[in-house]
Amino acid sequence: MIQTLLIIIVIGLLVSRFLPVKGIKQIDAADMKPQLRRQHQQLIDVRSPVEFQTNHIKGFRNIPLHQLKERANKLAKDKEVYVICQSGMRSMQAAKILKKQGFTHITNIKGGMNAWH
Image (cartoon, rainbow, N blue to C red; front, side, top):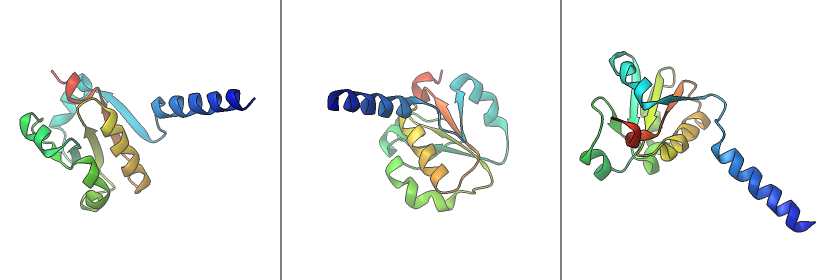
């Protein structure tokens, strides 16, 4: 009985980790490219400074994930925020952080830099 309950809890945690979060949009890297021409948006790369310096997309600014909570107050809550990382995992964490801080227009770039061609 206890084993079954533990298995259900673990499965529930895994499923919730990969389900889309309400209020956070997902966009493919290919669909992001036309968005780069738009004005009044915030483009955030949450990778480390070394990763960012090695390769980044013009227009994105680097705010490493571990600094996002402290630096989010420098972002406008009323503007769209696009978040990218290497694979899409850290950017989803970043999107959740921004959502908790009251941002309402957040888009995660699925696949991150790995999907950017």
